[in-house]
Image 1 (tube, rainbow, N blue to C red):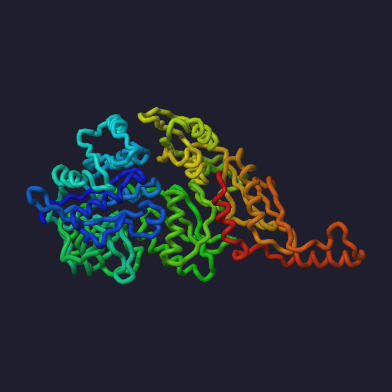
Image 2: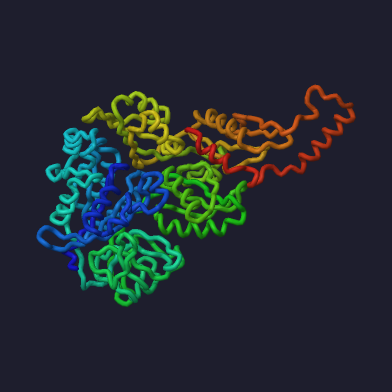
Length: 599
């Protein structure tokens, strides 16, 4: 098919605005999948996506569309996530498209991620088609939402199409608009091959499956290709498209979106965002790469069992192939042993990775308290980037610390403005702006330390607003702050996995809550076990885990003095052989309890 009849586009929107449902209607109207095989959220292929009701991974599907004039088109649709923690998936989707459908919920209006995704699409030069969804809902306020769209600079509201993805009303008009007005891909079919790898996943039989967008040239089965950045060479064993299941085809031509398989078993050889070219006739210029997402939250993941480290290593390699935003490097903890230091885009991203490791690979992991990346300045003028509490220097060499700040945009009904202002201020936030919108909505802008958003920020935000508030944030830079490292001691031994970095004025409150929580989740021993929190060589909080049995030396002991001394001597000898808490004695519930503590 001529690439003038190809349309590559994606659907971008805030979370729960109906992207996957609209994609279902597209698939039905184009008869891509027979009716008996259709189900709701067809492109949400993972069980965890269906259970949580959110899209986690971008999914592509090729559709055949015939216009009213009889012309045949090839539509390559990319369904994207809506949560801010998966914005890396949206970035990769935009890199493979020329157009984007901007979906807005008629009952909720313009939300935080609506604006964020709109700006991303504009930066990539995509043609936008605004679509107003859920017009059949009794809560729909079309006039108010249209006014919100009119207030967005540079957005042409004359092309807004009202639809109901649930009933299918107006969806055919969207497909017709895509065929008429969205641009076709540009490229040279006779030029040397250039293909952008925008995603990948691992198949146990075919190895790494690369999702590619052909910019110039074509790919045939049997071609010898190489990556332009690394020079890694391989031979293509299969080419095809997603319908939405993999469907092999003879070749991929200019402008098309599909997949290639080459039997590559080494997940580390695949570079998402790299350019593919022919090994015999390579291109000279790579496809412009999209901006890679920098991890915002760091945490250590350790196997629950001692013999599961090798399995965890293989699972992390395969998972990073499918999740390019996940950053992994090996590390060793004094209390938990060997594991991996992982970088995530947010707490939901971290939770999803842990859940996928358990479901897809059968590996349970222990996660340490999450941290962000700090800039630590020493007295000798050296600057260190620290994302691990264990590497935080002592006060004898520390000069000052800078922590990352984010500009947070919160959309909330005006009823909850007071609660939101108080909540953001309690998280050491700085007020930036407040704007009243149509329909009784308010947009608040606060500059908040990223460290304050790690523990329970999103959950508390939803609780205070009965689920109505939405959040988007963007990194804004580093600022100087008075931060300290708080260490947790169990039975007078440091457990580095429990250590955390926090603002000095909040150290005592959080340390007290942690030691109190650990008191009830750490297994009891035959003697009292102290749980202590230490900041700058000073213990600031303590709780004692009571012993399993009553102490023979407690008040009211009826034995003789010699018996009492013998018990004391025996107890002293036993303590000499005490090796503290091992990895197996610290239950996973202890780490989960710390993660559940609100900041």
